[in-house]
Amino acid sequence: MTQHCMIYMTSPSRDEAMSIARALVNEKLVACVNVLGEATSIYHWQGNVEEAQEIVLIAKTRRELAERVLARVQALHSYDVPCAVVYDMAAGLPDYLAWIARETT
Image 1 (cartoon, rainbow, N blue to C red):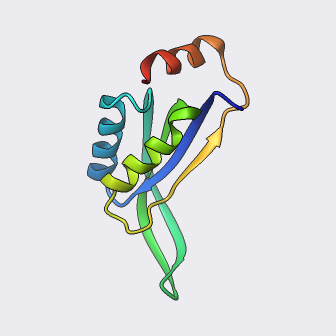
Image 2 (image 1 turned 180 degrees about the horizontal axis):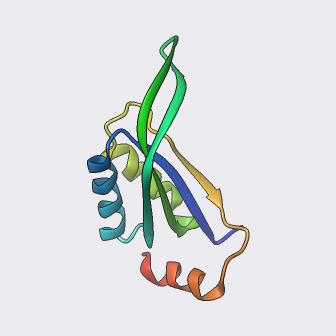
């Protein structure tokens, strides 16, 4: 199994994105979260096509912590069904991967 992963998320506001990112890092569930700029999302929701501005987050962690991260995101997020998906890392710079391992518990 892959030892590291990235978790892609979206948030309705920069304030919520920063709050989620800080909580995940402070709780050592992730080593780092990139909080990116605004993205336009177009999606189906409750029978309608919706359009919204969202903030994208990408968190880096160990694969064994992914389920805990997802549960924490669910608890912190304001959406009923937040976007939070896990992508395994196939490879990376050894020093960077070691840093992720050291910074997460």
